[in-house]
Image (cartoon, rainbow, N blue to C red; front, side):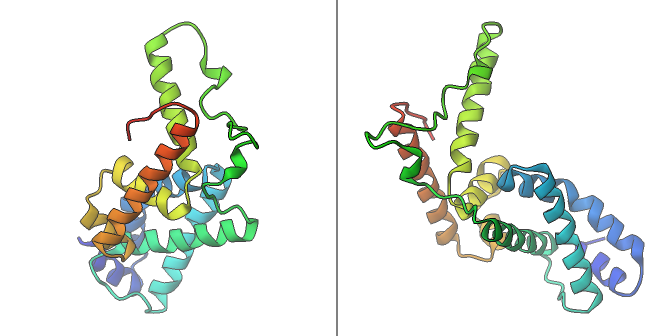
Length: 196
């Protein structure tokens, strides 16, 4: 059954239809939320609230089946993430605050002592690079983090991204472009070039 068919059945009182929807989308949705908030408790709260809002909308007849149920869930989660960051005043941005007055990095994203064990060097370097890139992504504005996650971690096409976010393909392309520019700036400021 399609998502829209399951939504219709749930709207008519068949609770097991929503169980199928939840099982179908919970892992991808949770991973998306956690990638952006970097905190299990916050991710759990936002994940639960996303489905509470979805249930409320469906039960009150406010969801109109469009064939994009997952995109609708993403939009609900995205709005909740924004609200969470706004309430905590934690909206991530690329900022000079991470650099001292001489322009040197005050928060060193690249030299993590926990990753410097001498054994299995190749695996360590790979892990280090992943951590560095992940840390830099966390410094991007939320809409750029989101698009990087969807494009490079979920492997979505720009058309799929545009459909899920409700933006034009050009907007999706522009956000990826700006995200990559910002990542390069961060890497260059550390005198380390990351080929992104």
